[in-house]
Length: 124
Image (cartoon, rainbow, N blue to C red; front, side, top):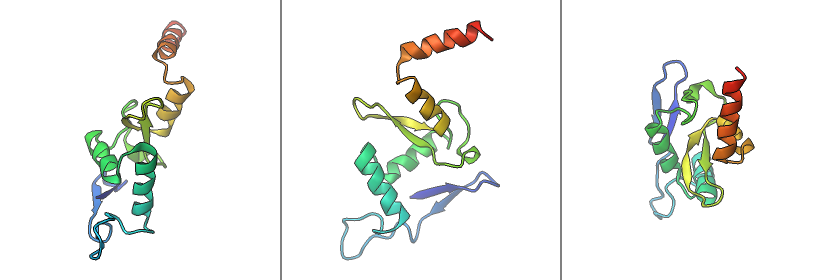
């Protein structure tokens, strides 16, 4: 199910009918090839091993917000990014671009992050 947030009302818009049609001749595809949903689903599966449905379920679980900064996705121009462990490939959650890049800059190293916290606490 494709979800979108109405930025004026903060209500979730569910796109059901045309986006979830399955081919009558084949159950191979959940999304119609060539649609943005099919492309997104294919990308998520190939890179993160999650489906578009899994991504949307994470959005709902996270209340449509970044796991770290808690900012609602309506405040960002881009979709929330899939955060994953680069060694294991395990998906950790969905992050805004800023938080995702921040973790990347700190190389996902908790020791470096702890030192950064100490530095900020001592210099504010």
